[in-house]
Amino acid sequence: MTFIQIIDYKTSRQDDLNQLLDRYVSQSQGKRTVTHSIVGKDRENENHYVDVVEFPSYEEAMRNSQLPETDTMFQEMVALCEGMPTFTNLDVVRDESINKHMVNRMFDECITKGNLDVLDEMVAARYIDHDTMKDVSVAGRDAVREDITAWRDAFDFRFTTDAQLAEGDYVTTVWSWAGTHKGEFRGIAPTGKKCTMTGTTTFRCEDGMIAEGWWHVDAMGLMRQLGAI
Image (tube, rainbow, N blue to C red; front, top):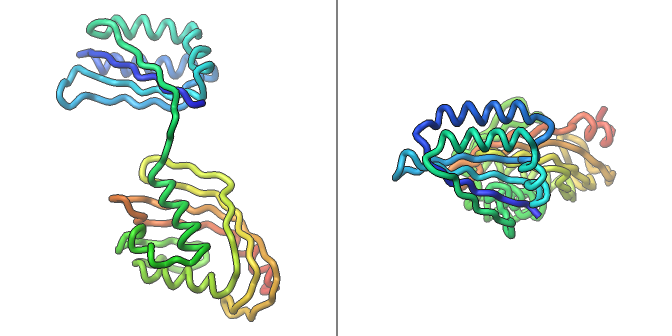
């Protein structure tokens, strides 16, 4: 179970503290078990900071706390703070990425199942699409509708998510695709062949909607399976 530690402290020497944390990261390379760290500054109190640190588990957090580098860093941190930092220990019981949820809905509900009515809820009006199978980028929801319709007319298919990473406004999905060629595709008459393809799609989200997309697909492999090359 993912474990979160919240460190609450006050300091007027944040620059020095940042340098301390940079040294700690360098010195504990390959030893520390921290997977993610976010430092926030209180808007109402400029000397008040909160550090949110994520670990794979409570046990890994305890192992990290026992490192000599961690102990040294903490002692130096206390010297830079106004008073003793306080700690809140949390077991994560729910972890959601809203952007990942929206992207998965795009793949499942819109592209695979063909429910294009929900595009207006998820895709920005000025959406821009970059696709290695196209000579130029296209823009707008109508372009997305036309593209999805063309693929669904040509294939019965499904996507399988092999890996997915969300960072900031971006969600990258590594996927596998399997389909049966049932309709004309890029001038190729229906063959009835079962095809597979792999690819990577990165979506950029903005204001709660998908604003831009980059598709990198094994187009050559698909065309070879269809007998086009």
